[in-house]
Amino acid sequence: MTFILALDQGTTSSRAILFDRTGLICGVSQREFTQHYPNPGWVEHDADEIWTSQLAVARDVLEKNQLTAHDIAAIGITNQRETTLVWDRTTGKCLYRAIVWQDRRTSDACDVLRADGHAEQVQQKTGLVIDPYFCATKIGWILDNVPGARERAGRGELAFGTVDSWLLWNLTKGNLHVTDVTNASRTMLLNVHTGDWDDELLSLFGVPRSMLPRVVPSSEIYGQTHPDWFGAPIKLGGAAGDQQSALFGQNCTRHGMAKNTYGTGCFMLMNIGHEPKASQCNLLTTIACSTTDVRQYAFEGSVFIAGAAVQWLRDGLGVIESSSEIEPLAASVPDSDGVYMVPAFAGLGAPHWDARARGIIVGLTRGTTRAHIARAALEGIAFQVADVLDAMKRDSGVAMAELRVDGGASANDLLMQFQADITRVPVVRPEVIETTALGAAYLAGLSTGYWSSAEEIARVWKASRIFEPKMSSDEVEHRRARWTDALGRARNWDSVG
Image (cartoon, one colour):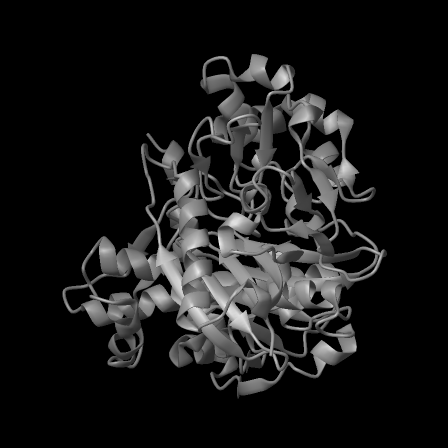
């Protein structure tokens, strides 16, 4: 019996997950790694720690399950997107720590680009809005702030990549410098209409083409791992950014199907078919996974802080000792008692796009307890998702029949029920909620013949539970209005004073 090995390189941890032909998880290994916050609004990772932690869990899951490289049909990779790395092509060493997608250091540079009138050009070509979230201004920051970097880039000595590129480079000991098209579509340098790097954008952001990886499909045999890593080569059969991978893992392959992933942030994607469409509601247009030569596209709404808010309650405030305590604590009170938490620790994403927003808790009274704050934190996640869903409905014109959910926090029944209530849409949780990794496994399995067709893997997906809306319309309207009030108080906070 053989397996697919999915490497899931996330924002706070690296994981390796084994899947069998039925799409079931047969083994997991996970390792958290260090988060660096050198300045307010800055978030960095050690590039070597990303690689060594990912290699360690891959080896560990094989060892724990008494498997060798010969038992693995292929490796699929899924990764935190927009996190930016620049390294020396000769030594393979990064010039600077990885600048994480949450990082806001280039807010001023983005303000200048918008003021200079480039927003429409960027959105038309990339489907994105000008924001520090994406890679382009991060690359520019590294080139301008690491001594000699821009000159070295001009000489072709440096390589840029998102995390998928970094892992593929290291897994092959520098033989592959590629990125899959879904990750490429998050750089603000790729033309989503052509599927290739855009010279006008490269000029605008000052990024030499020589730095860029070759763009490849999400499902294809790219090469194989160096035999030193696992004792024998393993095929590298697929890669996708985590949210597009989750969309594929949820089998949202038809127009109008949507999913929301609850991880460090929340990310909702809706399949919009084979033609890119411009959003009128500040959503992103991004490239989705496809197993054919015809590209598929999706609307995306990104919520920067979701599960990270629970981590903050645990690590920053000490309200809980472990993340698993949040649900019973929140459930110990009937409601939040008028407390609202806007977890805009890294600004606001879609549909607001306010890099200067900051987190707030409002409605506190002498009777407020840690349980009310815990409940407000969970509800704050759901309210943000509801704002994105409303925008997606308006942009697509599709009356959403259901919202498929995945990611760690989708196991939280209280959150899922409140999500269904506040959106008035059934929330469907699958049997396997690790659909980000499952999507990567599907992509690798399809390219290597482990699964014969998309129809075969569609039969693998099964729902576990459906949360139906229960809250009255009046209550929903009242709660959404109060949330909007709280949101307004968080907006543009960083520029006050």
